[in-house]
Amino acid sequence: MARIVLVRHGETQWNRDRRVQGWAPVALTDHGHEQAERLAAALAKRYDVDRLICSDLRRTLETARPIGRAVDCEHTPDRRWRERNFGVLQGLDYGELFLGHPEFTLSEVGYTAAEARPEGGESLVDQRERVLGAFATLREELGPDETAVVVTHGGPLYLVLGWARGLNIEATILDQEQGNCAINELVVSESGVDVVVENDTDHLDAEPL
Image (cartoon, rainbow, N blue to C red):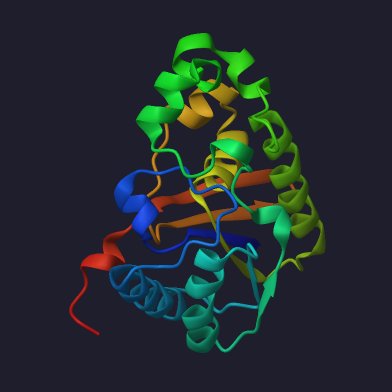
């Protein structure tokens, strides 16, 4: 069976500040780099990686580089795995976003929030189509015994896992969690996709490298 291992990037300052990162070229913090190294060591220990794919944004590229060294695999950037483009709202903290722009709040207005598109950005529905398209392409390309690692963001992780679990778009965003450098493993077979590991961050508590 093929495996797709989806991981989130390391911590950034905007994660700490709870700001909407979108497509901003935000770098990892020192702690984020340490998380990426621990993630790389865990992936090398657990998996025989055949492909390494990543979003082309700075925080995912910085996370992918130590993984590539650890698993001896070149990373391939793919912009379809980017976080949601929040356009002019990028950089706001979450309080400013949801209090000032309630039309984007799923818990308040439901599905219509998923269709709302910020100026210069994309809707959640747009992003889901983009990300699930990238996931479908990867599934089709993988050989029966291959393992692919994808370094991406919280939003794409929610969307793929929500699809695999049969969640509606509200539950997909509101009822799931993903820590920085979390590991998620999906097994791909002829019968479908099964989530066997979800939001695993135990490797971040390991002994010092």
